[in-house]
Length: 387
Image (cartoon, rainbow, N blue to C red; front, side, top):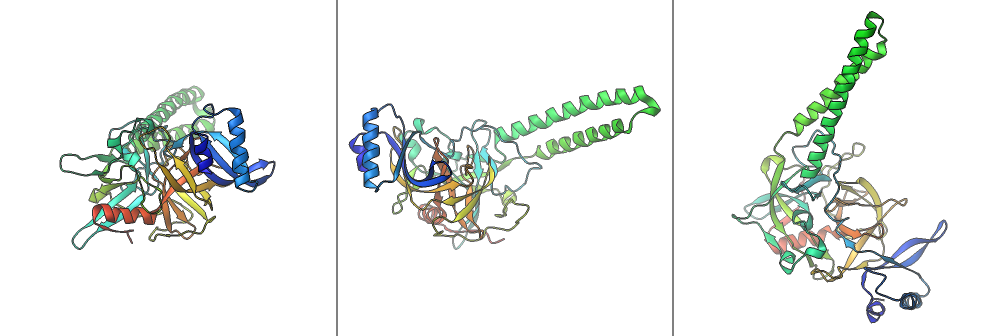
């Protein structure tokens, strides 16, 4: 299939086999081809490619779309509304960014322990591109190389992300200002009516006082040192030698007072992630916790996707596991890079790194490949905290 595309010099960036609705209320296996530009090919060549791929796949539907590979919607994200009060120890799915960087953010996946015979380090895990944000088109060869912490080069990470923190504080202050104005109007009405004032006015004043106090407490709670740790290691951008999937992860060495546990941020099903599922069944249901979209569910596509960063320094072909959202809902959105994906038993499957801009698939790197590479690159063994 890729050979057919290359024969036509098609600017393909993705080749996938997925279930798509080609007729109303019925889905079909579909070869989904993503091109960086449809205009580079004539209509005749597009039709010839579609026919050749359909014949190769014994009549499978062929759909071509225009898009590009995206790091979970890219990292130059809109601000998210945070749930306060802030946690001293970031939870799975928390918002993070490099400290002071107000235009990029991502997701804190969870905690790993790196250890040898003498040392145990508690590290947070996210994507390399969250900790070193740069648009794919702007990447240079130097950006592809790994990063290792040194005495003269400390990169501090904060949670929540700077842009999310600023937005949350701004919205809380706006709520306080509006409630204060409303209370002033209500007090004037109360004085006007005197003893005959309706009880609803006093109730509304109490509600305004409660809102003002709550928002003021949230602002006070957020007035803390949000720095959680420093970047210990980043992969750069590379492929796993055996699986040929992209490795894009970064380790945050946590400050001791900021480390926590991998507790699921779910009020209905509170438990901790303590084990890794290395080979989840194809088609199995999964969920993730992300900075932008929170908890979402999906399923693992049975067939791997072929992905290419066309026209960038990261011009490589990788073979990726893809997760499809359920009920027509996207599994991830901008800012969810770094989110951990777990199965229904609470086993850790992998970490989200991106998808396509043109449709709703999400790519993840299996966690066992990440932990194996961490050991190879740093010399430390890796485990999930048990507490």
